[in-house]
Length: 354
Ligand SMILES: *Cc1c(COP(=O)(O)O)cnc(C)c1O
Image (cartoon, rainbow, N blue to C red; front, top):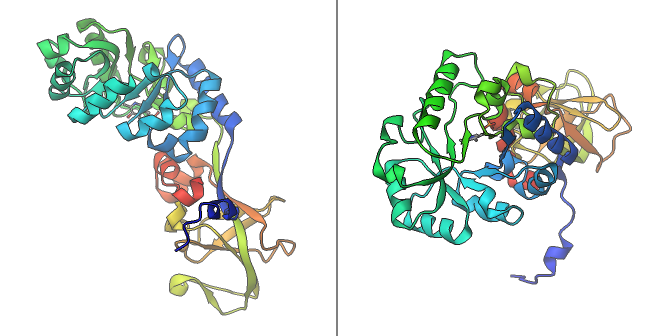
């Protein structure tokens, strides 16, 4: 076994990458902040910045002006706190154990209290500023409005009073119902800021904005509602190098299951990107890659774990080592695959994120 640390300096450059447009991310946050009207926009950076890489996302969002950040897990705090002020970080899952409360107190980040048990746990630990999630109809996490009178809740020092919309990306009567229920809640308990809207909620209009909004998807280029179309730009694109180019004679098939047979003599390029990287098998025979000159190269046969084949017959100048970009416009890719824009973002694998 070679444990020589210097080996890590010799690791060759990877043959796949997730291209990242920092300018688009910054513009998307500013667009959401503007669309939030008099409310200020925070940023959901959970799940490694929706799969785009929280390490590179944080400096960009801070620079754009974001000050409030939301993660789901306590384990996600270190990467965020490395950049941002602890007082601007909220942990959505809240304190589930004593270890969670100890970590919250030591780090200074705020737990989002989601249940009576969490309120009691936070109070018993000495508490301090926290956020409170009130359930106005989603029935996921949150205390119920009728529980707000409980002494354990009254004792909380609430920074952000929040609720979450179940159907903000749809034209559902539930949106107005939840908005009205949340407005009542804001009158029931003292708090410093109220927050209801995610990306789609922001697009629902000023009634939904309150003091602080919590966009996630839109920051990373997703469009949650038609009203927000054209407001955000694509942030990430999977790219892969060609690791081999070879002939595919007429009548021969390619890949697992031999699902594609060449109708004529072809040239194929094998790309260093597969479903383990998040380029899922649903792109088999469906996906398109783009060459530097704009040529469109269809995926041939099934996507493998580490490789994908594309048709390069029409582009004889391509060489091994050249890079191709996947067509990965989130709205179009969602239409094509049946996956949500959220899934398309967060499924990028560790080799691709780099
Ligand atoms: C993830 C999350 C958000 C962000 O939602 P988007 O739809 O990605 O904008 C906001 N609030 C809560 C509570 C969340 O869990």
